[in-house]
Length: 144
Image (cartoon, rainbow, N blue to C red; front, side, top):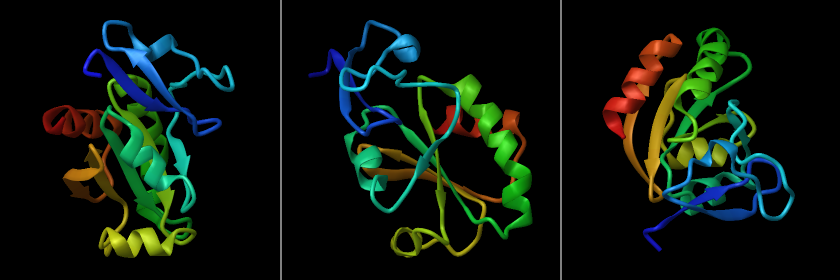
């Protein structure tokens, strides 16, 4: 299976296999027909978090944030800009820690915004604090 990448559809949650030799930037979901990457972070929830983290063979960068957090609001647009430059090599995603407190507790989120990079279901890097898009991209590239 090393000749394919597994990518979870941000629209319907279906796991898709994309040939490694083909760019995933234009790939569409085999179930719903939507683009697998659209240059925007995927909104994760308690219901879909595990599927995106465990079923994706591309690294998943999660921004743990909350609506009341000023630095989180400042970094939101920067994280979205970084998604446009980093996809399809990585999946950019956001998780509202207030709406998914059990996941925030599971990953010991004590400070937000907090970025974590997941690969094969495991955390491979983490970084606390707000960053501009170019710094986010540089950090992701140096850790994937």
